[in-house]
Amino acid sequence: MNKVGLIGYPVEHSVSPAMHNAAFAHLGMVDWHYDLLPTPPAELPQRIQALKSDGYVGANVTVPHKQAVISLLDRVGLAARGVNAVNTIVRNDAEQLEGHNTDTPGFILDLEAHSVTVAGKHALVLGAGGSAHAVVLGLANRGASVTIINRTEHNAWQLRENVRKGVSYQFNVFVQPQKSLQKVLDETDIIVNCTPLGMWPNVDASPLPENAQLKPESIVYDLVYRPAKTRLLEQAQQAGAQAIGGIGMLIFQGAAAFELWTGQTAPVEVMRTAALNAMEQPE
Ligand code: NAP
Image 1 (tube, rainbow, N blue to C red):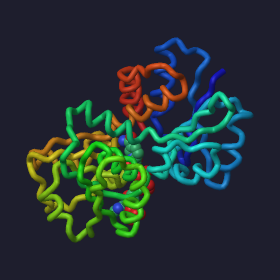
Image 2: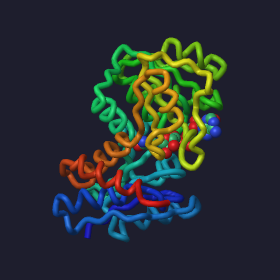
Image 3: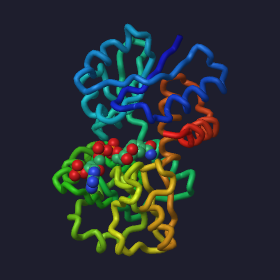
Image 4: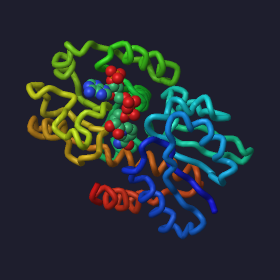
């Protein structure tokens, strides 16, 4: 049996098992299975050490372990280093555990699926955690000028330093204080929410104040995918802007992980249907 699993805490509400097991079934991969590996922080080292002996060929890593896991792996890919977070582990042919980050390709592939072009655009990233690193790296490497605004400004500056070595384009990444939000919005084409604000059950929250003015020609991307239409996306639609939720990124990052583990092309639409069905299940 080829096992893969999700290491995080908590993990019960994840749609990843449904998404990956549907993909295995669709491709007739009967000896593959994805399961949940709930892991409190104190147990992370033992969990990583036991992956090989427990027969896992790979894993996904989620909150709160994406940074802490880095020092426990045998190798970490360049992109994951730039993002300073690992969301996918692959056990390679040399029996080493390799760390990867598929959030960057997941985000960029979903922008492309929505026909959003990035080069030459001004982007605003709200937040400075693991997902913000992945998003800033993706946008900057495709030629966007990126401004980061975060509750804790110091963390935004830290993000800027962390991603610098991973950006092969001209480095146009800036930090602004929260008080400059409206001024930045006036000059922004693409706004990306990388905070958990608006996520179920706090569905009335938004990273933008109610009186924020959005340009109708702007694009608002919310990494939050539960609920599908967040308060931020409602604000975007009310302003006439294009509103994109985070489910597509979730599916594409999962598809990228699937391909790393199996070497097979991921059945993206099968994974999308399974993820959407799993999300409709009662909590
Ligand atoms: P994270 O590493 O914990 O970072 C969270 C960021 O949000 C931090 O910068 C934090 O600011 C800020 N923040 C948290 N609570 C806030 C509040 N009440 N007010 C203002 N700012 C706040 O989290 P993450 O892993 O980046 O994930 C962020 C969100 O993206 C989550 O909802 C996650 O589910 C979602 N996500 C979606 C996908 C997808 O595939 N669609 C992938 C990854 C993540 P400070 O620096 O001040 O603490």
